[in-house]
Length: 505
Image (cartoon, rainbow, N blue to C red):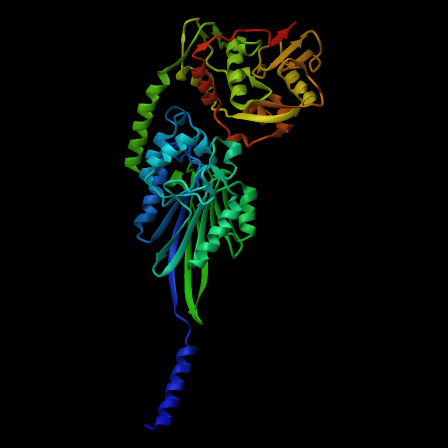
């Protein structure tokens, strides 16, 4: 073969090789998401099925990991609070159970800070799972110990960038003290850019953010896959460029996203394509993990003993009988209304007599236990703060008195309010005077009122509360029972009397 012929053959072979399609590295990674899981045990639902809880979540995660593929289990936050048991141990049992399920990435939601900065740091110190919070810093501006901003993982030659952010509205919704929060959107975009620079082929961001922020992250392609929490809904969206998922709440549903990622080398650069498949797992169809279920049962047994612990002693008679709390001012109604007003700093509080349920008398000298409070406030209501005009507040209180002299669940037990009414007057025009914080009600003034979420949704015909401005989402608020227990414990001795808050003629 001549030198010229050999050169021609080499050129032909080179051209043929270049004409071959570039070889791709392909990998599938399964992302599992849970968010907003407060209750450690399953719940019986309206359809008669049991869903949620840590044992069912553990079974889902274990089954996905057992398949032998690449799995990243993400927890998008909100779990230390609120639940009745967390109100007792400040979320200690939640961290222990989360350690058993072992997420690969956890980000703090706003409820992680409900018990203050020190408890947050203590619980996070007990965590054995990776924690991310790229937008969270200490008072000195430095990252918190045990938290990271981002990580780069490699699966079969494909590089997965991971970042996470804490709920940036925590200072408004909760009690993080002097911890500093930066914008979720800004932090995710900055971390994604850094991960791309470090060679990430695909970036997933785990965030705890409201839907407005979610939409901004999605619209600006802040990451390829966004795993979010906070809104408590089952949410999946994909526009061919960005995917976003939320998995309802309390592990009723767990979302798995199977992402196939292909990386092809072209002209010295990595060309990445990816495709998601979404699987919504109904945990009603999952057999609970036996080991985690046993741990849940033991925590339930241990913590239930705490329900009989005395919080305070009453020096006065407390009467929660139906005929009392639904027809006139009651000392126990005053106590509960005072408790929720104190916890929020509202101008006044209104709760309904029908929400006080134990139907008993506590004699002077009686101990008041956690179990007593839970028996009285058995509906599991949350507190709700609204902003309402004086005129609308008057209408709400008229509604509360509208069924008298018959006892009715809508009867208002109040704090910070003095009402004088004449029951001989027509319904809707019975109130003679109202004072809020000692001053006559001003019809056009905006008042900050705390109530329970039942009335805030318009229950018992409190439509004025339903139509008022809600300063926070009711489902995201503390449990009323926990706020009352905390208040009663601080009092130590209950001395609240019937003192003329509602005067009926």
